[in-house]
Length: 104
Image (cartoon, rainbow, N blue to C red):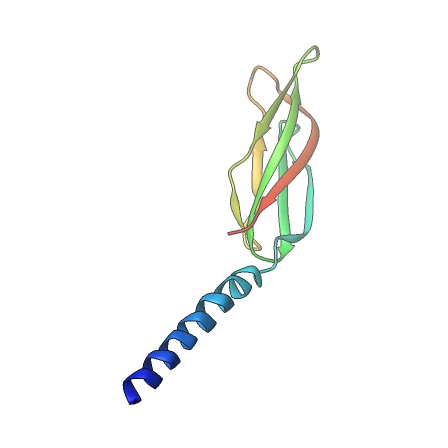
């Protein structure tokens, strides 16, 4: 009888753990309070987020006067880092800026 009770309790504990795991994983807040803009140099854009956890990536729209090209910075951790996108020499001027975010 004791073995049967132990098996039932162990099964119940396993079910409770598995059912609570997705809730805990979703509790992390996504990046928030994000800002972006043109950098001090006209060929760069930046993006950062002050709250949440995850990653942010700067996106630049670069121009050479006749065509545009989209360039993305590296993914950096929120809230401690700033992402920078640098326009290539073929499209030297940043004419637009935005950002993307993702969870850990």
